[in-house]
Length: 640
Image 1 (cartoon, rainbow, N blue to C red):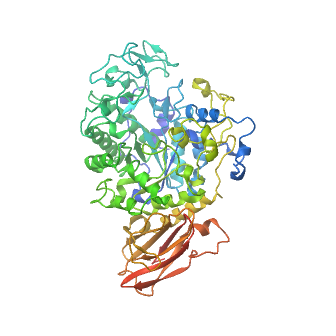
Image 2 (cartoon, rainbow, N blue to C red):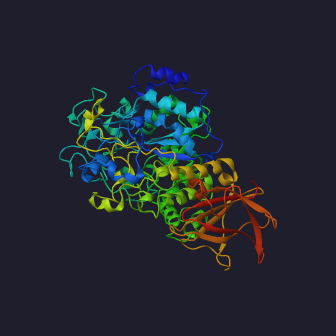
């Protein structure tokens, strides 16, 4: 624990951010040499673990219906997922650090942990009431500091999801505002201020307690907010600093006015406090598109500089830039070194999923890396500038269901994770992917309100609470459980967890992350999609549902990555390799075979440790890849 942390944690959380004496030139946990070496894991703290899984059984995937009990009600399960805290917390995350380490995770990305309005059920964390405190549902500041310290002891890094563009619904508009006091219609001007909200959400005339209004004190000036109402979050030019999408509230969440004096500086200082307090390693920046390019650059730049003065020379900043991949590229262009990367939450995520499921030609995804072809922009061929996403918590593009919800098999998601781990970029695994979370079985989904349209179905509680927390402030009491609702457990269950290290998907991903860690060529090599020859035909780009192959090249090393994108049938092909690196008669060694990893009695082709001889036909050097089972992955290297 740093001296600053020890001092701050010995007293109540600060009331004024400007009065905090932040450290400088102190010794903190350093940044990694290259963030491409990391494997990120994004988890919703409330939906991940409560640390008490030993008190409830592991879910039996073969007897899921038995985990529902008599009188099961799908409407109640769905209500629980949409509008209740489930009980996950920071100590629960701590209890799973070894589980995550075994999976091959090297960096955690935590959903926002900041204090929310107690009378609301904003378990997602994006509606902040106190920017200097941890929400009591999740723990306290000491818990967060300890979590980061224990992660560092294991060689893991931790990122916080931070919100600086808006606050929670901490104040109300005037009752007569068009559209009402909560979400009045957007105006290009400015509404009068209404009233701050008290601990139950009621209008109050002044902020008197920690549950009232907003904290710290510097944010308690009504002129710190745009007060423009709720408008179209896609309206206006991305380059216009006063476009509607940059001035609008985020529904009921209140937009900050960064044209006002010191507003951006005070918010940046809040997050510098968290860097200094917890020794955190980076931030995921929420709603970055909704601040101007210049404001984003100023905010990111000052955080980067502060962290560098603490020895974190590459404090990781990754932006959530909604609106598609062109918009992401625009922010990367302008912010340059002040923003490490953007999240692949636009077209690229959809294309990855389509290719992994055999629904699209392979060049649909790999063209994304070509600066001359890709709508994703010129930065994608630089592996450090994008974080690869298959699933996340809100799916701003496409249906709001996990990859596994409509997969051909439970393990088809392994094909998607292989694309994340072994192509250019920084991979990010969404919590539960390693357990193939998918929601209820297809025959039950007809009973679920807004299936495919609601974020809740992306946010099952892995730890399987029997019941959720009670609504509002009642849920903060130790016994504040709502026994009228089932917990929002995995696969449409309650009372059973799914932290299964023996699960075949977990073990497949574990084998792939181990190979990525062992072979730098898989992290830093140049990338080349490989043409195939099927049944002696000419070498060409493969079609949907066929073998997908690409090479990573580093100095004289070549790693060939092979995925069968067909979800039901085995596939094979002759796969082109680099002729200049591989002499006739040389061989590649198999270092990953996910089918073998999942089956101790595997008797198929290309076992780990076996060799495949290079062959030549019509001047083309190639490997014969045969009978790869559905949705399975091979990695072969020429310099084992």
